[in-house]
Length: 51
Image (cartoon, rainbow, N blue to C red; front, side, top):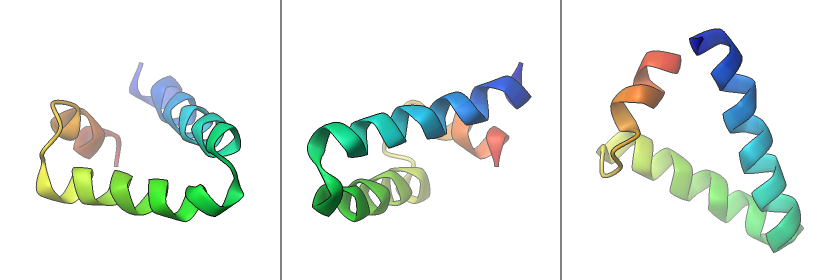
């Protein structure tokens, strides 16, 4: 299940980047990393299991 979830998250981020526009994509990436590092999201433990 974990192996199939990682591409899904990447596709979701890619879709968000396309919707918000190319200039916003690096900002989304930085926000995503910040959430992962700080653990401010309920998804943080799930993401740490993926990576």
